[in-house]
Image (cartoon, rainbow, N blue to C red; front, side):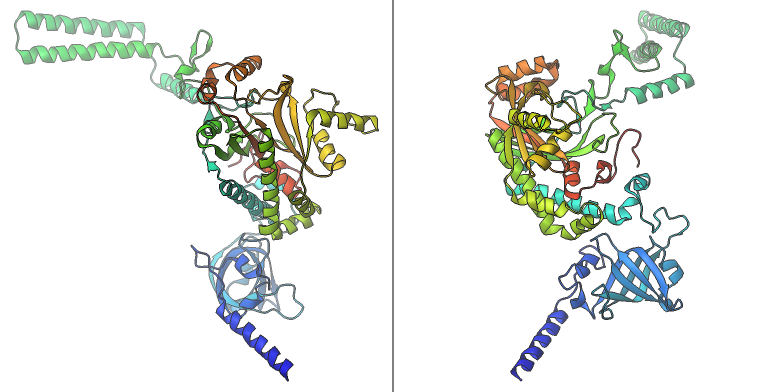
Length: 569
């Protein structure tokens, strides 16, 4: 009897709890996000009996019981899962409700499904509030399994697919985690410019920003419509100036009134201005302006050559040298005509910079950041990661757990090359030759992290000849205090270094690299005035997504990929 009482008390308590907990509406919309219902530990069954409004797009729909009602799998993008919705024929046109892609907003009551059903809760519709119909014959995303390559041709619609929406939520989670990590550790977020006059990488593969072409085309059209003045036109205008001048002289000789002389002088002034305008216009030439055989960039919008940035690092350093710990997170661009699965023309970089820091501090920060990102996905995005695990990479969750919990191996570049040479001696074949001084290829990086150590690896102290001018020269004068973080699946995830804070050394390095000094004078000022040891790194955000998801092509982990030949939308 006591056991029965306890059971009854427990059931009453559960019922009371279910009644008291109301499903949460979206803060700025009169609907309930589907994730608020189905991502509860009980799958939403605790909300049974509650009235809700939900909205979303039909993933699949089918009529049943001789068209008496329809089942809709509804998804609103808030999570990977769908909510099953049941609509009776008297509530709406089932023929318009069931096509994939249809948008619906419905009011209804959450119900427990029949025993044995996969879902824990379903929605019985009482009213169809909104219907955004679809013509199934024209809808670009049929119910069949679609390849990621196909979806790149419908980039404006692909976010409605399970895969791309999951990637979008994972990307959002990593962006949120990035800001959380750096804010938590006292970094300031700095917006660096997208338009720059500095080449951070020294590679020269930059998109140029100019108005010379459009202005030249505009001028060409204008000169066709309104041809420039001829020499005869200018001579005629000069003759008018002479006549106006003579008129002023005559009025003065005749001791005319002040008003008459003033009016004549004004006419003379206008005639002279007209001559100047005609002479200026006669010099106009169609096309891009040139001076001494070279393009005249002083006539360009910024009065000098300008480019889309390849990195915000140089600019954010100026803030690190005043505010200590800073970071930037934004789009970067590279005009590299590459069609590989690892390259984009527009990509995002996370670039922290730490003042009063050396290479070991930089490595510590990079390792802590990568681990934090991995743990964040495990803690906050597991349902999407489980979907990716089922569909693309069975090892992606295990890989995140391993990286989040494993100390990174740290070896010098020289040690890395020795290990690779030993591997070749033992029969390992690489496409790229291994010797000291090479820039490690992706196959070398992945061998170290996937085969040799089977965990993340930080390689540091690289040859100066393969690294950028701003990296600090080591005492051996052969290597620089640079480091790369290598992870399974993608190889290099992070590249960083201690920056060269010695004025004379960095001045010499810029000259060595064949770069002009003038564009970097501002950067040298950071060393001239109150120089400080500092370090930083860059994480390729899309590479982090490739690592996390195991998706093969970088074009599928950015919302609107830009690469040679494609810049849709």
